[in-house]
Length: 226
Length: 363
Image 1: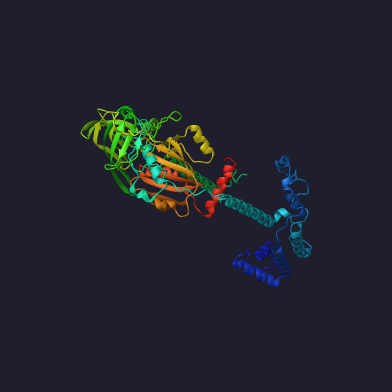
Image 2: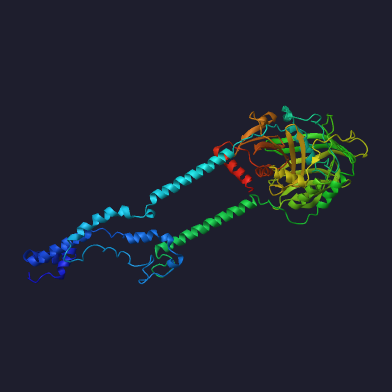
């Protein structure tokens, strides 16, 4: 194996991008080269730290501007976003500029402080989030209000749909109605025997023959007047 | 917003999903529109006024006039067919052009019920019935026939689909109708009447000679009075279904209150609707008058009648009684166009409450 250092292949080794034979040769070289072994160890540690970082949280300025969305003038919202205008929410500093994203660049001189930042940010987040980003209570409140309004409406309709002052009980006089219907229809339809069970009947109302006046009904089975 | 390719919609799969939902929405709208249109037209192809020349109407109008000029007597056979069966009767008829017509059972006798005609405020119901007949059907001459040995002209009322709805045999000598029948859309006879004996008599003799008796239903309602009733909450539609038109309205005062009699006709049959304010008793009065209780979608309807169809129900603090010698489907359609029977469920009561809200708001 040549004592030539791994160089670019070191990064590929750490990333697992070398082929099987190439990887074996690189590992054999690392066994005998302190410089390359130290550099490979540094690359692995850096990679682990980068993987352990959380995604960047929005800054408090960004959240504040987000909560003020409702008060943004229409003309401002219609402006085309651009680098000079500060974007949709307007004004410097640019989004996320209040805090650096992540930690030091790979290979930077001081990676140590990076590991201390994520816990501190997670501790502040609940206190800084605006109310509109906590929809749970609002949704519940709206749901409770909606259910209450629905219950009130249905309850009122149920009460109104009842018989506050019940109508009087009536008994239709079927026999009388049958004679009247026969007169109107101009048909000799006398009340049927089954009707004799007794509907109320005005005194003098006939049960048997009925007669029709010319012009008011035909005596020939035709509707009234023809 | 534009997609990656500059299109005004999201690119790739999102565009396809958007198009699919649009097509689905259009298909649903088309189906709803089709359902609405078919529902408004009705299930029968014969529903709707029949076009064409009415060359038989002059004979029918002459028949209406003849009943006011010719006196006669005879024996009439009458039959009515309903869902529960057919009812037959034979009656003796005495008609005087001056005083009226009296029906007797062959061996019967009794008082005479006479109604005085008063059409000063309401268009003559007979003329309205004839107008309705002319509007709904194509009335044509269909040949000749014979009734009780007397030659007669045959007139047919034809539906829009070409089926026959009614037939009339008009006496050649007197111009009076001697036989008539009403048929349902399937060609079954619903109502039939025929003079088995017929003779012309002197107008001054017999026939309601006892003179007119007081008519308890003589109070006819004009258009203005009908409007007032409707404003007070009474149901009195101008039409029941597409072809049954209001031809007469009368009222009578009972001890429990006024009763309104609404007569609807398609020119061939008459459907009577009696409306009174109140409710039926809990003891189910209808069943005591030869009616049976039928549980419908909404509530209870009392139905009865052998040939003549009878229905009774209560709805919104009014009691409706319907009597009809008409095809069953026409009676069902007419009943469906009136307020349905009250139901006692929770949602029915809520529905009535919302209906009252609408009334209070004038909607």
